[in-house]
Every structure is written in C-alpha cells, then in structure tokens.
Image (cartoon, rainbow, N blue to C red; front, top):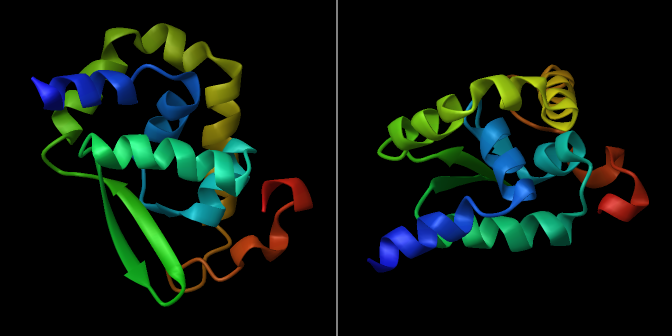
Length: 126
C-alpha cells in the first residue's frame, strides 16, 4: 500500500505532471528540464525527489550531468494515466509549451548529450 500512496503523491501536483509529461517522451537532464518547464533547479529537485521516491524514474550519470527517464516498468501505467484525459492534456497551453521547449532544447544536444548546462538558463532558474 505504501507504493500506491507514493505513486498517488507523485501524480498529485501539476508541476510533477508536467515533468512526467516531458520525461515520457524522452530522457532529459536537469538543466534541460528546468529550461523546458521554466522552473528553478531547486523547484525541479524538490519535485524529482517525490517522483524518484515513487519509483517512477531511473537516473544515469554522465560526467557532471544526471539524466532522468521513466522507468520501463512504470511506462504503461503512465501512458494510461495520460490517455485518461488526453484531450485536456493535449489542449493545455502550458504542457504544449513544455513540449515545444523541450524539443528546442534537445535539438541543441551534441552527439545526443546536453552540453550547455545551466549557463544558458536565466539566473532565476539556476
């Protein structure tokens, strides 16, 4: 039952829904997520901690970058969750902007890896 409570908590916040929406499409590092979601690193870190505790994401470290992706075992549940209200999710302006921003940020990768770091972010999001 504890796992179900952690999952429910992870799904119970609009910012965490936005994070999961971006991550279900592609693996991303912290600076890419901050940029796409237009949130600070500290805010993102707080939300990622809840998502990690629920077992929804896997991480991998590459140099100084930590990349997050949806755990393969959780992806079917996540897809079902987003499909439940697909019309509203697709029409949400903020989520649409998140998708556009992450696509632009991913296009800046070098050999499939982030190389910009936080230098390209506004001061308030570092």
